[in-house]
Amino acid sequence: MRRLHCFALTTLALALSGPASADETCNSPYISKLIKGQEDYVYVWTLGVEGLGDGSDKLVTVDVNPKSKSYGKVISSVSTGTRAEAHHMGFTDDRRHIWAGGLSANTIWVFDIAGDPAKPKLVRTVSDLGDKSGFLGPHTYYALPGRMLVQALSNTKDKGGQTGMALYSNQGKFLDAKAMPTANGGDGYGYDLAVNPKKNVLLTSSFSGYANYMRPLGDLIKDAEAMKNFGNTMVVWDLKALKPQKVLSVPGAPLEIRWSLNQKDNWAITATALGSKLWLVKQDASGDWTAKDVGAIGDPSKIPLPVDISIRRDGKGLWVNTFMDGKTRYFDLSNPEAPKQTYEKVTGKQVNMISQSWDGKRVYITSSLLANWDKGGADNEQFIRGFAWNGKELAQKFEVDFNKEQLGRAHHMKLGSKALQAKAEGG
Image (cartoon, rainbow, N blue to C red):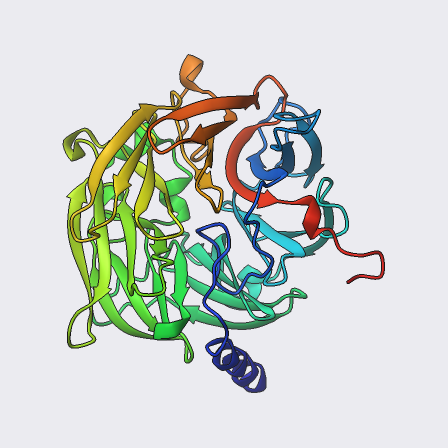
């Protein structure tokens, strides 16, 4: 284990000398093969619903090239054969595979997307996260050179919010584990992670554990004690050493982290789910990292529940989805110290994830948050919707109704391209 740990740190050290380019605005800077033109596919990681289709979690591929005969339609689906609260996924650094998992278990599914980008294949399962690390509910899959850093939400001991990160090789071999800090203001909670290689910084955020996120939302909100069990911190880590350096107070469950991709910038932004605020994490003049509340999202008193965010490639704009009111908002980040909302639109009765193309002209939105948190009845829309953005208006171009197609609950998305197909000899 000591040798593996040293090897992992050596890999991270080498990574720091690499370029800090980024994939379609929100992926790891170590992912190669950017899609800077028109994407061909959107991969949708989908929660299974009992009695709907095969009832299992699955990776669904949607054709999103307007020139294609199957534009806006499902062209393939790969089932896991089980339900595990499918949630997030991430590319390996070479973009040949997608790692995906669920929040109610510890199995990680690995899909090959290089052989045929239109038809991903399930090629491997990784099932030792709980046994090797003690963590439960893998959430974020973040590519490092030859490695995957996995952020979990919970633990196998009490299914509470204290958790950590696990480091794997791209081949699925467990290498190391790091617990989220509980000293010096740390609460031990985790959610997302993102790196800034030029600053040697890994930044993590915080949410809640299995005992909370697997409960029905209405029931949870009525439990005052349970509502205290949400994260209120972000942590600044030394990326090379994978050691926490500073705990930042960010009350209200800070979720997705987006570093500005502008090479001149050294800041990241997040949104708090319970606080409905945008927070800026930035170095001050002395080099110290600080967190600052820089603005509200909608009316915080109504708890619109900000969920996913997507930053523009130049760091000048930010999309924010709020689950409860079904709105998609756009913020001008020309001055990240004072974001200004310039647009909003109701894009669904419930909305969650949002992804944009590298050029910012296309935006994709899905609907599901968590199985027990999604709305019911007519409000239980399950979809992916594609929009065109001209800088002034979102215009819907297609929709796939996941209820009608018997697929399940549409959650996380990644973009794919025919051009990324590997050569027959594996090139």
